[in-house]
Length: 184
Image (cartoon, rainbow, N blue to C red; front, top):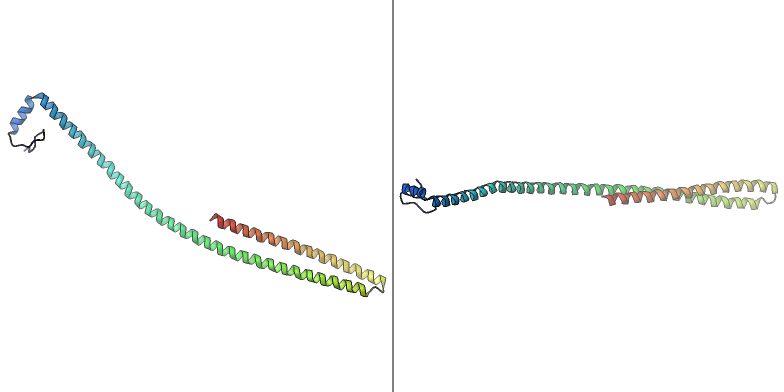
């Protein structure tokens, strides 16, 4: 049984009479049919919009889940980066310490060689002064002393060159360390 008429009024009269009245007036029938089709079209649009709305809600929920996963991934990446940075800093500190120690050893050896050379040069001068009485003997000792002095000077030069190389190596290691830390 129809409880509401097509025009929206509530029933209560004879339905057959209403149907006959509707069929007998074609203009009223067309008007009511147009209103009904318009209402059906509007309702169809609302039903069509419900589907995309559900998809949008599902996409939003998926984005929220993805966002949480990205937060966890970012947090893990930050933790790993911090660990890598700390390990690199510790390793660099050890390398710099070893380079400083090696440089200090080489500098110490160079100073010892220089002290030896200075001492030997002084000794050579004393020997030259002591042996002036014999010219031939003095010339021989002088040549020997000058050769030793040249050798020591060469060794000092080599030691100085080695010291420069060690300082260059130290600077290179520090630069690489700083570049590495800056790249993190």
